[in-house]
Length: 305
Image 1: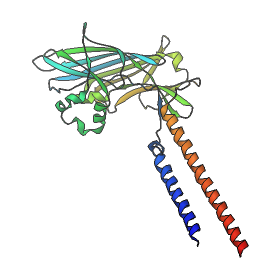
Image 2: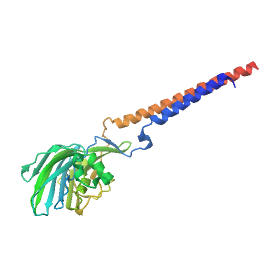
Image 3: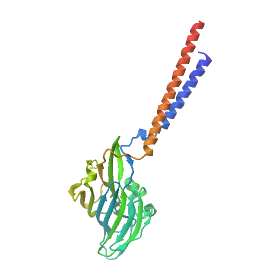
Image 4: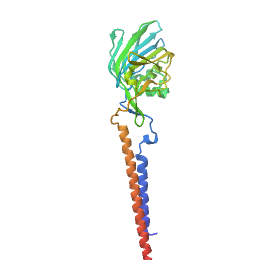
């Protein structure tokens, strides 16, 4: 074999190796681990309160959440009851989670408005022992925005805190050309109390006109549904309850007229798909050129014999 031929094969092998490495490492990890759902206009609501100071005498006893859902937003009204079984008043720090920041937030205790600040609960996590042993709980703590405020809970009595705010309604796509709206509420934060709730009630309602396209029950949530005064009303109620999931949610179909906004997730994957096609084309051209050159060289050698 001539030195020229060996050099040509060496160059070809090097090019193929480089292109293989590029194809292998250029692919985003999502290709190897495809996601089942793409979110558009992602937004989640608030959630159950937590505390950075567990007290044996005070616990989170009752939760009532009402959400009026419109097309792209929801108005939320929540009542939280804290019970003091001890014989002295307790000043308690409360953290209220918002996975993505809501707006028009009002917090009150009785008729008195309460001021609040946005704060990271991890700054106080050393006061909550053992909670980081649960990876899911750690994720909730560190991936969520929190507002904090203090309340006074009288001895042998209860205090009720009311929260009002506006929140976004998400749009997600379980498949190509399919779109659902989803409204979710974080309940896993109630586990931070290490105590069951005596009672929890959730009511999500929306105009019947929003619900014409059907109900996506993939959430496996056990909702009771009724219609009243032009609204679909969904309720859930629990007693002596410790949430066994992080969120409760309601999902419903969107008609075919929905046009999703530009999504970086989609376009990044489109870019890599095009890049892979281009790289495969380059490999094919190199192989074709090399084959033609070898064929031409073989024909020339045959003529020289």
